[in-house]
Length: 323
Ligand code: ASP
Image (cartoon, rainbow, N blue to C red; front, side, top):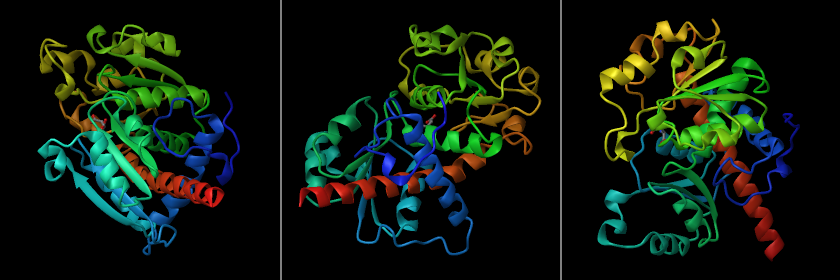
């Protein structure tokens, strides 16, 4: 599929729950808007008033450092009021259900709820009960749309396009919402996707999405443009999925020997948090010429600003239509 041209009005969704189902044009709208914020975030004065008067609630049922901070910065840089709620300090601890929490927050008239939850589908369920826009900041092993968008922005800025690139996503695919969102985005934008993982960390029917599956790094990485590493999500594993960390690193950890199979200028990516010596060698992670891991973090703030802008713009239009 072609990458499309875009304007602000062509993102017709109230929520951002996932990448699956978005068109190339809709993805391009978000990436193009993000570009403006990358520049703005590099200025001394980073603050805008676009979201003045808007209330954004960060509702995180799972731990997070970069995503929560990134959304908080994004909202504040656009002039919105941002409130952070984490489960440890909320009524969930006292037994309140997800829906009751959502309804309680909804009664306070937020404009955007940013939600992370350990269960796949929980964010969509919540979005059906509230009047505001909802952004999925990661639901179980389902989707993490802003991560895929920031990855796409990082790649597009470095390579000029996503079309025709060979992207290898390596590691714990089974438990990774990052992998799922990236697969949808990259295929929609015309990239080719290879998955490299031990059979135990790959869903059996994954090839039906249109990806190529490999069980060894050497052949999987051959001639690829982008190497995207994933964290071993041990908090989502019940039982043994691999013999030991040492064996995992030997066969699937990214080191210079394995990387030599990729193109000489292949970019190295990782969504973080990174386990050095588990899925990636420390030196490779810090390779200035090729690792774009820090750049991904920078792009994250810009992408989240774009998502907040586009969704609150839509909210304004819905409100006008309803009056
Ligand atoms: N930060 C990403 C996520 O929330 C990746 C990870 O945790 O490994 O899914």
